[in-house]
Image 1 (cartoon, rainbow, N blue to C red):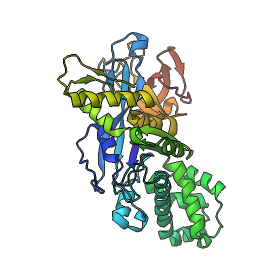
Image 2 (image 1 turned 135 degrees about the horizontal axis):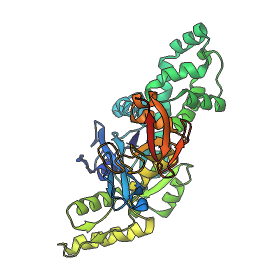
Image 3 (image 1 turned 135 degrees about the vertical axis):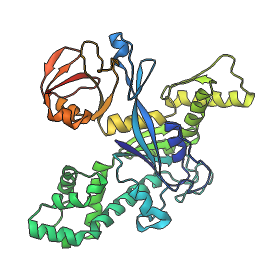
Image 4 (image 1 turned 45 degrees about the vertical axis):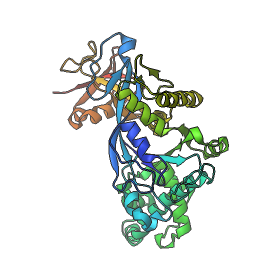
Length: 395
């Protein structure tokens, strides 16, 4: 799974990426600081079963912090997009191509309205941040449309020669964008196209691509700089029909650096932090931390962690599952207790989990055991959030 962090230049994308991953990235107050995409790992939180079951866990593919399992998620920070990026402006085609493998997008918006559509700084409230959301949607829709148009002749020939259904030939053309045939079929039900692909005009294709984008690249709106944003901007951005989260990326990055330096005690995603006794703080630093604490109380945290978790759990509908090899000791063959946590799509089965762990394990699947209930379950058992599962396979 990969989450893309996108938006126009100079809105805080790289700051958010740096805060989420603690990866060293260049951050500056001017457009196009990022040219090549930054790749890193962020984490989403879930209660670790260790506390509920009274065991000491030994995480392998994730972390456990005070009973909270931190599950890794791949993040991609894409360079800022400008109007007409789909036509190649501002190296736009390259930046859009970087999004091909993203499963969901976090659209970082300057909710304060202090940057224009090109990412040039102004004063807070000078620009309408809702334009940023509309512009980004349009750029991705046009990019998809051009990919289809480039292969329209091939699509038409395939439809005539093979008698293929439209969703089949469209899915083949968009396969590199992680678009499924089912998503295209659903889009075609909303925007039906003529049987003859040569009759597909730009307007219909654009409408179709908008539906495909909603299904294949769902978005979370990160209302960044919420601490200095007019309330009307937050209300407007919250009305787009997509998950919208008040976000303060600069505060999150500052808190993570302060925690790493031993100045504060802070777990990403918490609504508050604690200044450690004896921390050497200047008056300026203490006032800055006081402001952060006030704003976090207003919005329930900095919003960075919530954006990732809403993308994974709400928008994509993934659930965490803990596979083990011994349902009594809750351990793997090395004796590590609750070693791994896998994120799987909601509706996944026990056999799906076996294949996710290893193809050979899926091929040799016999049954599974629910470690909580000690009951045997079949291949079609639908996994539930937090399940602890042992896979039994043939030798």
